[in-house]
Length: 534
Image (tube, rainbow, N blue to C red):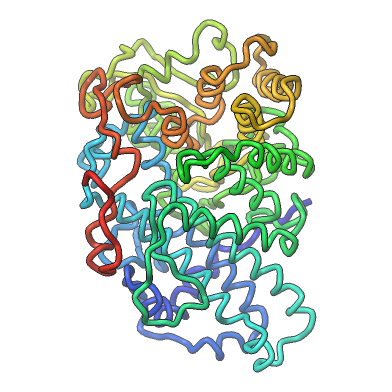
């Protein structure tokens, strides 16, 4: 059985120790400690347990924002609420598309994201760009401090050195994952590795260069990673590397103009063969005990959340509090305050329409109409538009998370259901595999959701897959990427409520398939140039 990776008590410690190094190696960031005391790296690593603590800090950067609680931020002049990795990822990938509406448009950056009006000054984009680069900086620092020369100089024991080879592979994977999201969202990134001299102005890699780096890096480290499902819960293993590779290959025509669907399908097969299984219940994936209930067999990589030790305004805290209705007061059902955040999040009509009569009793259909109108004519009117109750701070055994605001629910960044759907899509796009296997995977998802409307090979087509991905994976930070891959995010062949700031949706210019590079980041690195159209 997997044990939980304890990141919560190490993140502030790590950030304080590394502040000087981080400031010098990430020219687009200014890391601010909450204490003026720092410790030199060699002193830190006198205790061999520090290597795992520093590795934990890399993972913690996905969940936490600073060293002094949920309101703190280690990114100078960037608010904690606009820079938590999972939250800003959810905003740029989901809030920008056809599934979600945020009621409180005075929250910095949200109005522009959900109405597709963003500019290079948007604070959420700065938060995403900066937080991803901090992941890269943390990984680079760990790799610099774990070279053979460093370990020899510290007389590190052989048992720890064996572990460090795995730790280094995980650090490189986390760096690759950060570059993957920068490639997908911004199309370019400051390129920095542990081999680049500190205090040098980083060069900028475009999509093709980032794609090649990610592909090469993940293939190179694959043998050093722990086998699927054998690592501590919360740490990446071999399957996480295969997942990122499957993702870049599925979207390779967008990224580099190449058909790599056979490679996508191959990596899906490797994940499927890794011992994962669907959770017994669809909603187990989104509950407060998803690290121990049947979802532990399905979740490939989570962003860890804990209501006491890792308090943060991350995606699950936001979605669970935010999806409590303004009329329903249903927070006590999902383990937060009765009123939650008063109807902060609702769903757009186009998403609701994906759940017709055939999905009335489907477990994935957690839509609550409550007698409300389906249309959201005025975004500030929280009593209009339907809500959903997918995520919960309740447990599968009838209890609740330990805190009624900061939830225990881990965010399932990657899970097996997505792999099944990627396999089916890659097959349909000519990637090989078999139609019967694709149908079986789709039907496994439907059967798990208690939906008796199973499909045959005649039902399987790309439009079907896009809709099924929305039904299965909504609010999991995939939708923008899916719509772009299908050519439906920009342009006017598919509109949704408030797309382009039109209540019924209007066409978006093609350059909106990429987000702009934040102005502050360009000011810090003259090598960064703005994406076309902005």
